Length: 346
Ligand code: F1P
Image (cartoon, rainbow, N blue to C red):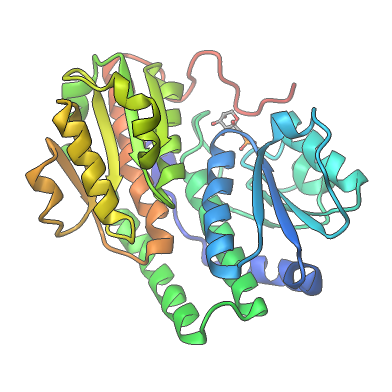
C-alpha cells in the first residue's frame, strides 16, 4: 500500500485526455449538463470534479452514486455527457449506470485505470488514468490519478468555453507541473503521521471536516479509515457540523480538519474553534507556513502550498498515510481488508 500511495501525475495523460476530448469537442463545449457516475473512492474523485468543472468551465454537474442511479428513473437527455469513473473498470453498478445513460443517448466518457476493462470498452470515449495496478484493495494512487485527469478535463472545457483567462490557465498548468515534487514532499510526512497514528489508534470514532474542494477529501479520508482499519469515521462539509455532528464532539473525539489556505480558510478556522470549545482533539492539515491554526489545533500537518484547484492532490496524502499507520498498528491487513473486493462485480 505504501507503494500504491505514490500517486504520480503521468505526463502522457495530458496528451491522451486532450485528444480524446477533441474527438467530441463540440459536444463537450456545448454540454448542457455533465452527470458523473461512480462508486466509493471514484465517487469522491467525481465530487472533486464537480467543484472544478463548475468553477472553471461553468457547466452544471451532477455526481451520482452509480449504485443508486441505475435503480431509479433518472432524467437523461441526448445533450448530457456522462462521465463514468472507475479504478478497476469492472464495477457492476458503474457499468450498469453508464449503460442506462447510453440507452438514453447520452455521450459516455470513461475515466478508468485498467486498460481494456469492461467500463472502458462500453464508453464512447475516455481517458485512462495509467496509475498502474492498485496493490491493495483500497484505492489510493487511483484517486490521485483520477483527480489529475478530471482536472485536465475541467481545464480543457474551461479553455474551449472561454470561461478562463489564458494567463490563469497557463498559471494552473505551470503549477500542475510542480505537483509531483510536492506529492513527494507530502509523502515525507510519514514519520510525523505515524506518531499521530500511535496516539489515536484505539479511537472508536473519527470525524473528518473540509470545505470546498477539501470536502470530498474529508469524505475520502473517512472512507480510507473505515476500509482498512475498521474504525467508524464520518466525513462532513465543515459547515454542516453545526447541523448535527457537533453533538458527537467531546474530549475523546479526534476531528481531522483539512484547513489549507483557500477562500474558505477563515470559516474553517472558526470551525476549528467550535471543535476546540467542545474539547474535540483537532488534527489539522494546513498549508506550509500557517501560523494561525498551530495556535489552536492539537496536531498540525503541513502540506506544500499549491493552486487552490490542485489542493486535493496534496491534502489527501496525509489522510491516506494516517489510515495506513492506524490500520497497521491495529494489526489489520491493509492490502486485503475484510469484506472488501478489488472490483465489486455483483
Ligand atoms: C470502487 C470501489 C473502490 C473501493 C473498493 C470497492 O471501485 O468502491 O473505491 O476502494 O475497492 O470499490 P472502482 O469502480 O473505482 O474500481
